[in-house]
Image (cartoon, rainbow, N blue to C red; front, side, top):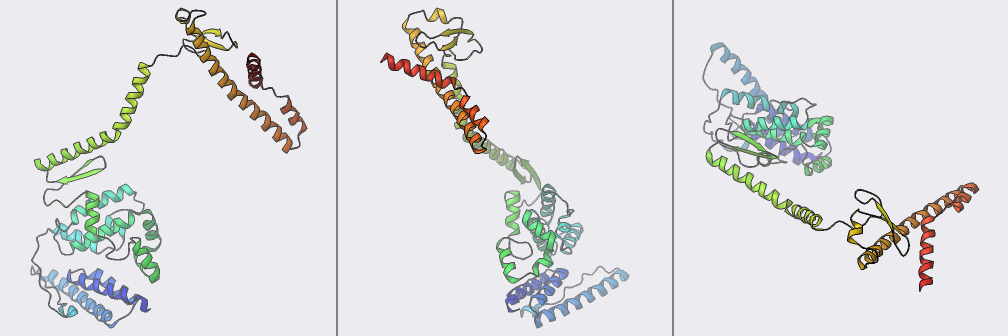
Length: 384
């Protein structure tokens, strides 16, 4: 139980901050959470004061509805909780819609409801919902009481649900059930940016990562080019900066692909500058006329203009036929290797299965390429 004391005190501190911001419902949840982790007299006292505030708020609401009073009710004094007086903040300007949205978000604990999405929402739906809520609740845009907490709640909800692993755990346990796990388990999850602990992520940093920079003050407009988001007030300076950024991105992409472009150009030039071969060992395209080399009788195919370029008995023809025979012998070596492999594999399979018929079949298999090579080598040896 002592191991949970630090976590309980942390929850109690968060509850006091929420009370200062006027978020009594969420403060009540953190006080209860503190009591579950480690009961203290401070938590019990604070819970009782929250209950009194709730009763006073209900009574005040009933009285104001009867008399339609327009006077603002002062917030209860919690200066004794910290031992010092709390200075009143300057009155901020906000609309009723903004205040209503803030209260709606702060009253929710379910992350899906905070983002306004169904449990079956896709990743794209979650991103759209976060963009919409974050722009409406950012403290620089929404100055209603509790807007900061609402902005943090939206960021925390998106941070959890946008990750497949944390979303699966959230769907299984929920924030309250997950927080009741062992301290060791909580610490391990806190290091992996789990969703139920406060202070684990910076909502402003998440906002900047998502939108690519700081928050615009007025006339918000969001642009998208590829995977980059832009936002600004639409003036000429912002448009010019956006165009410069796009031009820099395009130039960077061009630089990255420049080596590939150069290789392609050089390859194309090489094909254009190189002359086509004088022969082919196989019949195709323009190579339709069969011929045989004078030395070994290797068969090859030439174009119709071959006889005009290479006369019988000339050095040029002899050079071509030497090239033909080298290619021909290389092909025979490859074919001989394949023939021997097939023969040996067939024999081993028959030997493994004790199949004499297959072994005999392997012994009878012909290797014409190997036989031709043998004749060539024998002839060459005799010529030497």
